[in-house]
Image (cartoon, rainbow, N blue to C red; front, side, top):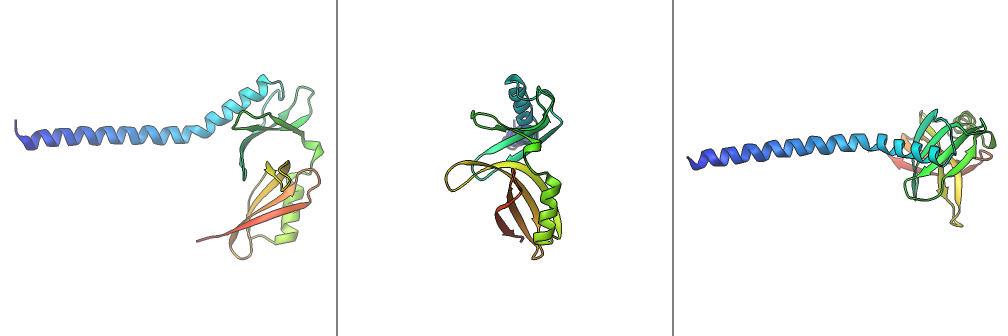
Length: 168
């Protein structure tokens, strides 16, 4: 057999294996958020915190990441359940105990006059005293064309802090 033919066959096999592994990796990356949400729903239901899930939100905070589930608890009250990626305790908060995302949207419009509001979602951050704080995270593009992350306290809608990132 010709040496060039053997090198060609080996190169083709290596190329096919690389393509196959690349596709497998790509699919596993795409499936990860869905698997994370499934695990969060199973955990919340197994700990009898929520009966059905109406909405799932992924929140990536400064220190931790959470899957936030919204739905009725076993008493029929609408709640948010914050399921951490780590094996930490779940945090449950009734929706009526905080301001709505619509109220936050109105505050942002008044305070910043954004060009575009991208997202408003509930989350958990850590304050200077190293305590967990429930917040609304509002992501929008401000009048200077920067991405802005503004945080408002979940309980009363008061402004907490913000961060801006210049777009390139």
